[in-house]
Image (cartoon, rainbow, N blue to C red):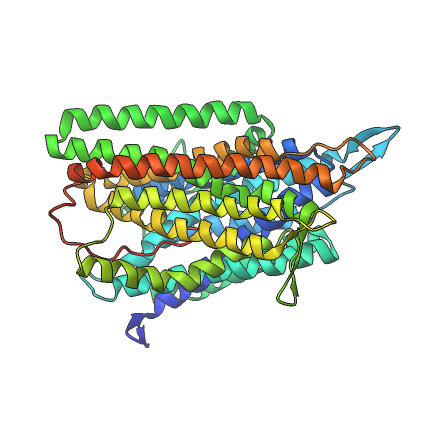
Length: 518
């Protein structure tokens, strides 16, 4: 049997297709979710934004738990299969629309059975992503032997698949969901996930034992007469019920996740204080500081799933270069720009490093947050130059996403590289968990930011375009000031923070490029 293709393990192709399909399913659903909640179930925007923020927060949080379970007991391969099955169930449930929301005697009446199915579907997807996302990325690394020069190339190919899946999902599901019906959009996302699961199952032999449980005998042992593996699966299904409850108890979700984040930060600092050298401790402080400020960036970034969809629905002229984008599709600009500019950033960091003028990692964080603020300045300028119908030209949205994506390329891969480079060996996994936990908190923060741009229309009324434009102009002004202001402060602090990372002495190397969904 052939074991390599173009010098890479055949298993990489299996993981590439599986993850592309998983990202298609996730971003296809995300593209239309907030619009579905507003237009189909008649939720007010402020409530829909909160639901989507809680959903995103738990999607980022669950891989910390799922990765731990897979590493400790289940093994990556079984975790990926279980996660994919849960995702398929979730997308099947999402395709059930019911009657949604209707107006009876001036009051909104929602189909509670369909709404319950929607929350349960979202929960299956949350837990499914938790088992699959971290594990499949780890399997890519395990396909290569230590010090294999093709490892970075393999991850680059893998990340390309992630962005290809995300971009195509947003374009296709966004179009089909709004043009033909929400169930069709959600159904297409589910079909791709089913294809991904089928490819993974069919290609298991190409993985050559990668991702098997560390201790199969322990996994097959019994507790109270039930095999441990089946208890894990039962626990995963039970977790979907708990997450469905949390999606409907959003205040509790915020308290839990903010508390977990704070406890994790304090716990890491206490442990580092007791075990790290003075130099390691200083680096830990810098990393935790940058992780905290990254919450600002990701909170602004998450507006693509919230307020920017409302803006595109009301005040965007969707024509650009002869192509018409609907509100669900504009987010596709981000993965498209990731694909286009990732090689440029690899080259840029390499050239600057060769000339010893590459910015320090803290400075890159500052630049990334500033660029995000500049992106919202493009949205703001668009609002200020709207036409007579109070519609904003699509070019401003394109420029906005361009700058936000450039900011992501400055910050996201640098953050991942920083953690693997500077964390003590025994704390790399914990620090990576903190990094993703920050993304979870950022999703909640993004939902709160989105309230600034939420427009809750009364039943039977539509807010005039001139009034909604004023709301978005105010929101984008705040987002611009927040991004640029925090970014400048981080950039200024970078002038002295870099010495604590030892970057004045170390040779510069290009940062690996992370993806939209990494």
